[in-house]
Length: 431
Image 1: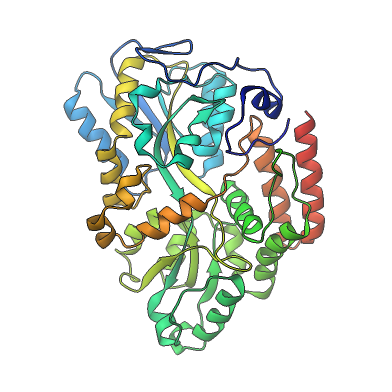
Image 2: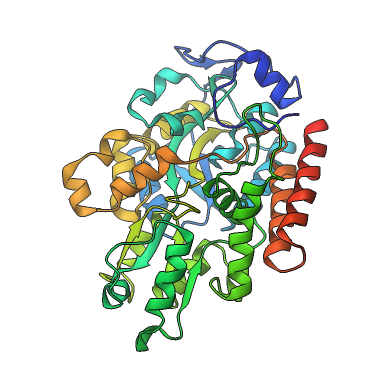
């Protein structure tokens, strides 16, 4: 099995990349009517929506709007744990038992291939969703072998949050574009009396999916790659080592505080909002929450820094997929259209800073005036590099987390961690 990146592959290449003949390659997915592939979208009645914990409150608000309009087809929100690994595990367990308890799944964009290949989710009719109005990289995350298996619900791009008030007071007029600039800016800011006890930078470094994201960003932002153009593992390189060296070296010298190797998204957000961090890598949802915190009006966002210039984000976001084992699929398809609509995306943007899949919203002057981070976010998404899209994604991300964490925690050198990671990915590819 080769690692398949998010670029489109022809049918034969996709079969090679997946290494498994799990589903036959079909048409482009431009089905009309009520069927796509072998799925039959019939039945109306109550359904469930399954996603990670909603820290913003916007999901339940959207479900309330739907339920008020559809009292006979109500949607119940099944909230899973915050961390992505636990979400994926519970969704897979439900699918493996062929349970109908889960109807519409909120999938991390990198899970589409895995869930589609195992036939845990249905192929969808493309004409039910306005894909032509969405950003192309976002739409590609919802496809497997050229067919649509999910509806893009939200996108995501990592951004650098930084304290504008402290940088200005330290005489710094622009956010850092490189890692070395960020380190130098930190040193200047920490000379201020009010910043002496602050830490420089944090991302998501606990041993979970967030570490896979942050590791991949560091590697790509140093000119490296996890896989080459042919989809083969290619992470044991000098460029990748520079990326991992930045992370591991920053923990060692204190640029990244030691406690940050326990951080998930919410831990870092809370630390930034509490005034403990000068710079912080996180997703756009943090923006609206931080505006209600003690740092309101004192921060802005910029592209992630890299080795020699602006870095590359991992492409994030969530897609809506329909469980193959669910009941009331006609209701489910209508709900997916409602939840992924441009109106819903606009509401999620305004109320929770969730990155919309629709291109027009990023260019709306009134929205940009209200949400000045939108141009940065759009560029982050368009420049983003996807994590490996593979059928055996669990094996790949577990290997990345294990080796990257060993380097950050000081258990291995970057060179040894990447050598061991290369071997693990090659072993997975050979299976």
